[in-house]
Length: 294
Image 1 (cartoon, rainbow, N blue to C red):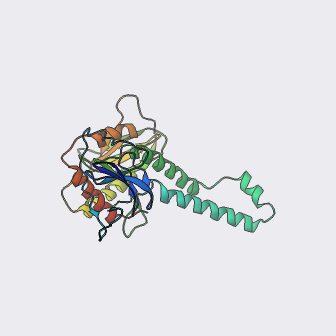
Image 2 (cartoon, rainbow, N blue to C red; image 1 turned 90 degrees about the horizontal axis):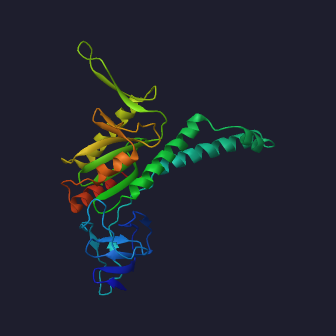
Image 3 (cartoon, rainbow, N blue to C red; image 1 turned 180 degrees about the vertical axis):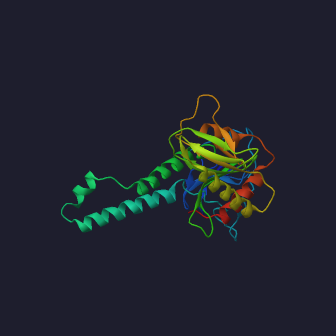
């Protein structure tokens, strides 16, 4: 049935993503298809909601295919699966936790439950849980920004590697490659060397040397740049979700990687830029195909 001249309530042939809230909509679920923007939204949203960074509705060039025949039925939307933030880290944590529990219960069938109750997981296991929590928290905030001019991908696998990219945001002013970190302490840059020695930039969190995080983001930026193979602004971001940031200032850039916190990141994604909604949708789709979910 039609909900209006430019929209239609239909049962999706393929899974999609709500244009308003960014939530995933499963295949065979009823949703509202918007003809003008060629996007879908949840039935709960009774009107279109403009993007915070673009008050006027923008066109999204997602291709739509109609089934052959007079009664074509529902429109088949070429949807992009955005992925689930922190999914691979969460799976690895649960796998290690279950493996340890099985080992202890097998070795100590009578007191295994007691030993599990009084002992703690190894740090190498809890680190996966901490990482998943950071990605999940940031992913939730990013998903609230999702609209025609801010499209997101979460937990993307880097081809021929065990590594992944936590988040990718495609916005009007470029592509953001975002690494989420749930670290305690104050992030700050430290520059060594100068006139007589080579200049070296290091990233410290508290007193801990975390320069390798910058190296990791730079590698991820190269992966995204190779996948796009075109002149699009690509920014590397380290987003610390629980760091001890000062009340004034705090964010900084080291070796072209921006170090900041979520509320500092969100306005950057919402800023205006040269990319149209059509270009954003195309970049988003190409990156989703090149970098599958982890």
